[in-house]
Image (tube, rainbow, N blue to C red; front, side):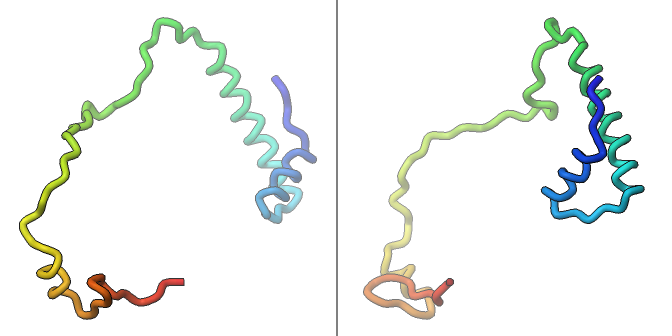
Length: 96
């Protein structure tokens, strides 16, 4: 098993913009080494006969055809519902 070094933890902390004390670095070094060891154990498992799990809730997508609807209201009626219009369009505040 490959051990993570004190310097590697400090480098990760610097990349993450974290300021860690030496005790925190030591604790993280142990924790990360334990996590990597666990991942190595998982990598040794034989999963060749295990079916992939794509969905655990039993739900499935409900697909429908994408159909353009003519709508039951015309453009002028919709524009009449707005507070401000300009050139047959809805006028909205600027967003920067």
